Length: 173
Image 1 (cartoon, rainbow, N blue to C red):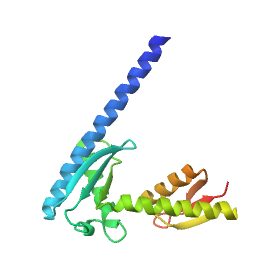
Image 2 (cartoon, one colour):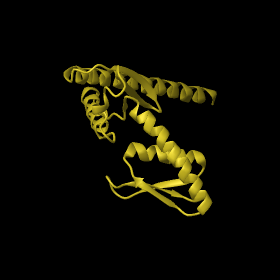
Image 3 (cartoon, rainbow, N blue to C red):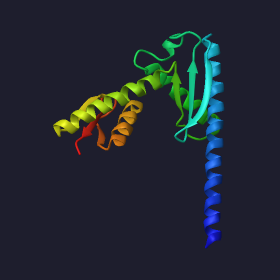
């Protein structure tokens, strides 16, 4: 019986290691693609590669604050498009679908903090009123941040509607 347990543990370690290796490869391919994009646009930026929540995560920081703002767009729409193009470049190179996340000039990290704060405020309102509350339409990244935060608080949430008008509804206990 212990041999079976050891074999399962060994298999899990190999799978975890191969997942990390695959995600690191995704990060390298994505960084090469983004470096070429920055060169074409004649922009300077430092690219950091990491692995977070079982996905490759890349961030580009410019030398001057706001220097890369036009790569983000007013509401992150350009950032979303560049992320999707980068995912396609990785898929073309590796043959596997990518779920990598891209951040430029800390747009997503700042947005994540804002959305977590919003989720806490809405959770308090829902707890106080006992009624569900529907939030404004959000993209998939924004909805995930809100859902994760609401779950951490101990409430339930669900998405409703169709993109681009899909929104989160926070439900009472």
